[in-house]
Length: 523
Ligand code: HEM
Image 1 (cartoon, rainbow, N blue to C red):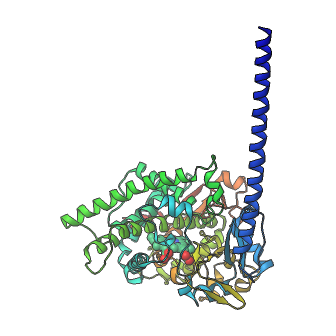
Image 2 (image 1 turned 30 degrees about the vertical axis):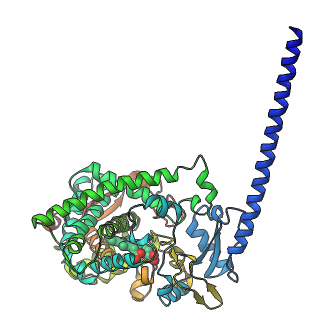
């Protein structure tokens, strides 16, 4: 008995030794593997780093990724003061060339536009999310991208936008009626974001499919939620796993699963809208729209995947950008009654106090045109634009950027370029665009892949802002005013890592300036 106990003890003791030595061996092996991984990654990082382009070196494995905190666009803008208007950063093992000065950006993005026509491929977005089709703005250059881009750009050029004016007119009226009703003629303060989202989603779908959004709040919420999720993945800095492949195996990484689920949900509503349109085309009851034109025109050789890609671009391109630009603008107007007054007088000088004027002319009230540009410049909702890749080698002065390099346009930095806007660059001052009507801004990007919807966006912003400021005095809620609520483009952005710059929420009152005239305009 005793002997067998001894035997058992020594046996167990022996097991202990074996287990702990196995553990030690495993730890040593993991340690060596980690060291080897760091050495190999560092060797790779220094090999792929672009010669003769200045920029911060960054940390092993992660490069400059986490140094971009707390606000990537602003950090890159500050770095441009040290490294110049064109410099490189390392995102994990990926070198990225950043353009952060207006002059350099325009010279290369416009002057050598053909060399910057490509888009980089990111693991999360291109391999996990976009398994079926992807929006134009994120798709590398190919024959299919060329066809889609051309169709979308033609469908949103100046004459085409003129044909959508009845939709813009109808939806702006609905928006103003909704704001007036919800706020009970300025007696109740509320957050206008939901109304803005509904109007912009409705408008985007109407222009794309020729049918208005059904009165279905659940569907609207679903579209908004899916598009918000997409923005998070589409964000150039949205997924660390794109730059640090090791993150793809992290048990805490849910990015890929989230991307797949968003793709599934997005396809449900896009397919629904497409098949409803096909039905209308078959019955011959469709209204003019981008998709119906493509379906009916034998010269437009687009397949189903192309058409789906265009739909994705329209919904993704127009939603976040327009809603956030309007949300920043309305909040700013509430804080700046002087600007509201100037705009109101300028509108009344042209159209009088009894009418908000026709919708045809986008430049009839130059102060409003300038106001729209200053809103786009100041809030610049796509602060890092959408990433590009070089299609050909680029030579800019001493800087050589080889084909296939990822390039960021820091639109935020360009819009804060003192050499262009002067010392009051951080002041919200629409007059700067009256003093120099050719003054550029970078909110839509530049060159061959710049925003394909910019005519449509300019027209919508002009009409909506003009009519809002003619109809209402916009006043901050008492609660927000008491709390000294602010709307600074830099300090008050809510999620600086998000693709689109989202303003802080607020409540405002929409007080009619001339209730009788407004009622007539809405009839
Ligand atoms: C305030 C409104 C808007 C802003 C600030 C904005 C900004 C931008 C920016 C910065 C890009 C990337 C450009 C680049 O790569 O250089 C882009 C691309 C694009 N936008 Fe817009 N956008 C707006 C509204 C719209 C609207 C209303 C639509 C259509 C409904 C639209 C459709 C597109 C499309 C299709 C692209 C992809 C172009 C391509 O890659 O070839 N955008 N937009």
